Image (cartoon, rainbow, N blue to C red; front, side, top):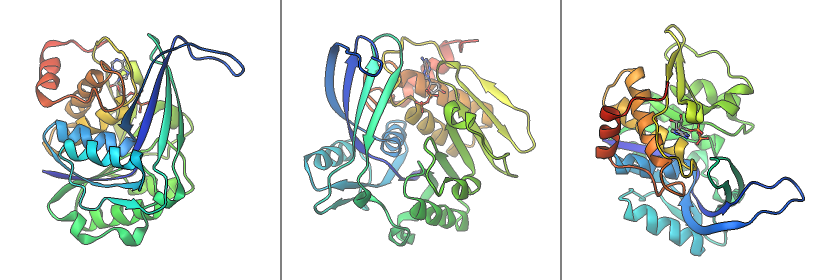
Length: 291
Ligand code: ADP
C-alpha cells in the first residue's frame, strides 16, 4: 500500500548537552552529529520501515545538505519521483539540543521560503495507487489542494500539526485524522467534526483520542529506555498510518502507534530509531503499557 507524504524534510544537527542552559548560560556538548530529519520525512521513513510504500513530495536546496537528504531517503526506499532540488536555494536545517537523560529538547529550525510546494504543483499522478495522504501542515496552499484531491478520491487524510501557520485554521477541518502534541492542543482545538478523529500525543504519558460521537480513549505509552525522544512523534504517525490502513480500530491504532514511537525513543536522532515491524509486534505482545 502506498502513502503519499507532503511536508518538512531537513538536515538535523544534533547536540547532546549535559543540561539545557537558560539564556546567558553554558552547557557542555557530550556528542554531536548530523542526521536527516523533518516531520513528514520522518513519518515517511517510518512507514517504509514498517512495510508501506512511501511517496514523498520533497523539496531541498541544491546543496550538500539536500543531496544528503535525498541519498538517505532513497536508501530507505522512498519514492522520490516528485522530489525537486530548487536551484540556488539552501536546504532546510534544524539544530536540536537535547539534555542527557532528561528527554528534554530545544529545536531551532530554518525553512527557506523557496522550498515551498505550491498548490498547482500537486498532480493527479501523485495519487496513483495511493491509500492515504499524510501532511505536516507546511505549505498551506499545497496542503489544502492535496486534502481536496484526497477527499475526491475517498482517501483518508492524516496530519501531524504542531505549528500554527496562517492557514492552519482552514486546514484543521479538512483533516480526517488530526494528530497533535499536547502543547499544540493546549492552545485550543475546535471540536471534532463528524467523521474526524483527533489524537493528542502526550510524550511518556502516551496518547489520547476522541471523535465527535465516541468516548475519549486514553492509550498509555510503552516502557522503554528512552535515550532521545526526537522523532517520537514521526514514529507515532507512521505507526498510526500503518494501523489505519490495516483497518484497525482506534484503540488498536493508538497502541500500535505508541509501541512504534516508544522504540524510536531508544536511539539518538529523529530517524535512526524508527523501528521495523517485528520489534513493534514484539513490544505489543510482551510489554505492559505504562499505567
Ligand atoms: P512529539 O515527538 O511530536 O513532540 P510526543 O513527545 O508527544 O510527540 O511523543 C509522541 C509519542 O512518542 C507519544 O505519544 C508516545 O507514544 C511516545 N513517547 C514519547 N516519549 C516517550 C517515552 N519517554 N517513553 C515511551 N514512549 C514515549
